[in-house]
Image 1 (cartoon, rainbow over the protein chains, first blue to last red):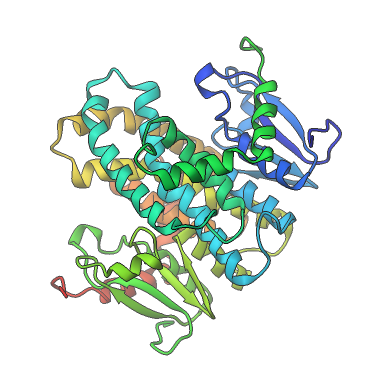
Image 2 (image 1 turned 180 degrees about the vertical axis):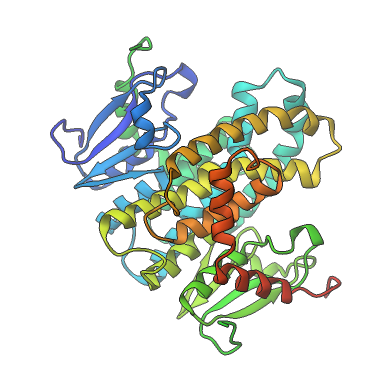
Length: 222
Length: 222
């Protein structure tokens, strides 16, 4: 279990979030990467309710995770995954061709797949009763479906986006998991199996359990 | 002028796009990076109207740019910027601390700023007359405004996101340019000046001219 309060690597996480967000906060991605390579990490818990103003100097949007690692402070989970990938070739191959492929797919998850799912998440979690959301949802699902069909075609019969498991899969599986929860993978068995393959890895399960165990039952206010 | 039909580096671009997209297609980012470091590149023009099906094997969404560089094929403009940054420290510093900062901001542009602007672009360019779009637009502008205010605070009085100009600025300036066109920077002079600073660089101007000169007047069909 890589959680170690004395580890030099520290990951920020929230000390409480509403039920719907539990298991989905993005420090999960950093934790998952650490679990894959057995890299010990400590957590630094932040209040999501009373976000300390000074935290914005570390993370411009007040979000988690930030990691501190040997004098570096890195924000944005994509940048953190890349950093952890540079630390261990099991997360990011060293050979030029597969490395380029992994990094292409890493950005694909963050900029070509997740934005549409963010828009859907905003509708379903925060605006479900609003007229605009009801009217917008069908065309958004259609755009998302087309994107996911292309993703399924690109994945083909491979297990992972590059030839071996990588940080690109950590990003894409955690992204697609939200599509799965919305039923978008029901008719896309290849992507459903891909997400299942990722989530059944012991490192994912350990990361998920670790995130959940850090949440308090009630919000802590300053 | 880095365009050279015999250059080993090739960037894909569209041979025609509608007027509203001219100067905004994302090969601009790759061209800009090449111009900054005087790296010659060739273009390979693709039809946006009759997108060749085999192109999806190179770029899962059929988009541009893809770059080919010394046996590598890289898609997603963020991955391409990172690759070009690795080729020249004027785009990505070699020292650990500024490098981590640049990569954090690179992902911030792609995952924390651009997604909201994509949503706005979809409304304004493709759905302006739809009821959902009219109803959604105010709350989206509010969310975008909050994000941009935080970005302005994080930029502070610096000229660039890290201490020196970098790939993060290529990504963020081209992203914010769309916010500027929507009037979102009118009340945010620090960000407006930042975008102006980026767009006034000779390398940006050369990249923009190069993209525009590659468009034919009418779509070319197969």
